[in-house]
Image 1 (cartoon, rainbow, N blue to C red):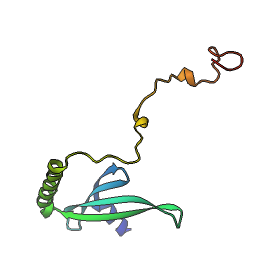
Image 2 (tube, one colour; image 1 turned 180 degrees about the vertical axis):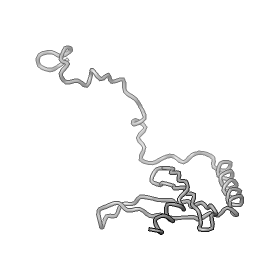
Image 3 (spheres, rainbow, N blue to C red; image 1 turned 90 degrees about the horizontal axis):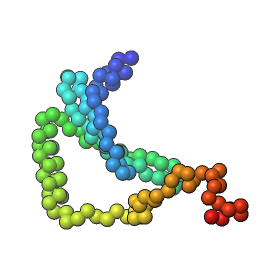
Image 4 (cartoon, helix red, strand yellow; image 1 turned 45 degrees about the vertical axis):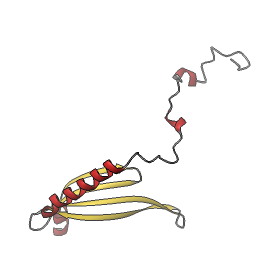
Length: 124
């Protein structure tokens, strides 16, 4: 029973960021001494042909309060470098440009019961 209470106590805050095939979890937890820390978990979904099912690979980073500023500085520098040195966004693969176009279909056009505009043989 004590373990369950400790487990509930150490989970303070969670945020989830879904990004394509990856999901990032930002969890604030508490140590036994009452210090807060951050865990960043990357979870990525894969498919196993052998077992014919999906599975997840997870990677965790534990970030403690005394390292927040250094981590944030390094992160900011890396992001700024990418933004200033990436000439253009890479093209996404497997995207059909026709998928992004909208058609001008009305719901009435989809109703097979509405035969007002058809001839007896079914032609318009």
